[in-house]
Length: 121
Image 1 (spheres, one colour):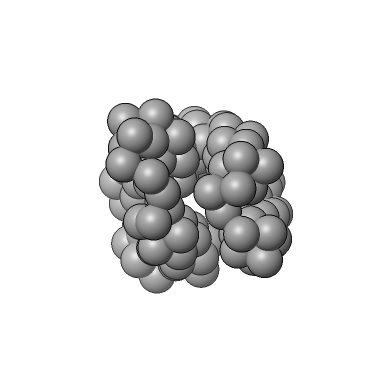
Image 2 (image 1 turned 135 degrees about the horizontal axis):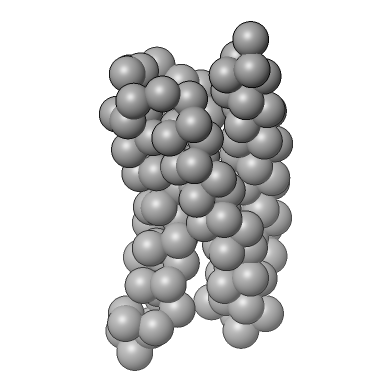
């Protein structure tokens, strides 16, 4: 069992989630159960699955949840782009969130590889 709060990748994913909540706070009310909810759920799933994986026993279980987290991060890409194209997210905000998301995905990928390598030793 690992303390997820000590992981840099979890902290970055948490910071991205906070930024996404702030960026979507001004979305129109009619998007509350649509795009706002989809973006927030996908984003929240990233650090949540890292945390859940850290609470599981063994590297195999951790890697399974890290893979789910990566899937959620990939899912987040499109609704963020859609929100920008619809004019709900300013281009500068979209660019910043996209860059943060790319960073989280790179860190997740590296962590997945590290956990897999540690499990084969």
